[in-house]
Image 1 (cartoon, one colour):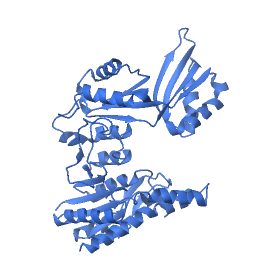
Image 2: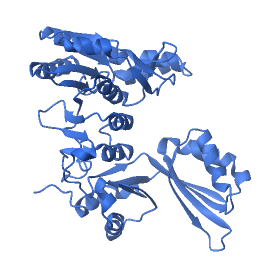
Image 3: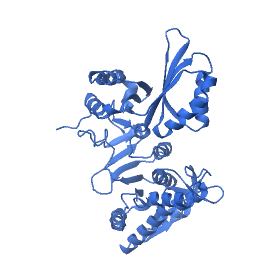
Image 4: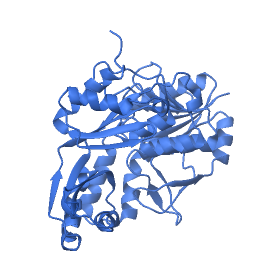
Length: 404
């Protein structure tokens, strides 16, 4: 008997009618003889409404009470889905399963799950419905896991239950080679490795939350991404050993959530980089791509790096405060950039992937501003106006276009 965890996102449970359709889908899995646990998100728009009420009540709100309020949306969905399943004759219950987290409210991390009793109920044929996105901190208070946390809840529960598979139901029918809204010839992948999916998620693909992929990789949970609105097969996220044909490039991701800062005329001496990036780290501003170019006289350099676009103004403010101590000449912020990444485990054994990327962009007249690489990824920063052109050109160049 298979043990399956199914997770349904906000668009899948947007209203009561869709919750009833989700119940039918869960029933199909139960009728196939599987043990089924379900993790649900809040109904579409519910969390935003709860956040708005919280801010309206108290602008400088207590993070602990904020978590209490915004966790309510998933609780409502869990109860409604359990009722819908009961109406179909399924023995179903909403469960307050003990998911222990650290005490960081708003972005807690799961530490352990006591699933013994839950596992026993599943074995008896009961369907357990669990509110995603939340847990209990060390002091017994509700914590939430941050944006997309229900994906992490589902994968963590699948790991605790030693489930055969974790199905993530979304509004897309799988993982594509790139964004099909931009590249019409994008193909849906049958399988993708954990490492590739992790890079895709962290480089801008919105299909799965990054932490959920990390957890799946660490616990070897087989994840399937599929649509709530169709019966087509999805994409399996699996270990590299399960991929027979290792593609050189599996996908192309992009992120518009980037901003570039160039610090001009930086004194070229030891300790300057620490003086620039130290205060940014202290202010919880993450820096991604970094490149340094020295001047002709060797006395100064320009330092260019990227931050999240939402952090741009704060980063500029932090740097301006330290300007006198660092001694740089000027700051040039630029929010009109996009990061494009080509990703594939086949890069480990194939040379020339980066060269092909650079040549393809050059042929289209697209200037590369910053470059960063890893073992299975090459990322470049380009002007935002060239996003669509770059994605289509690279998709074709790496042979990813669908036939026809």
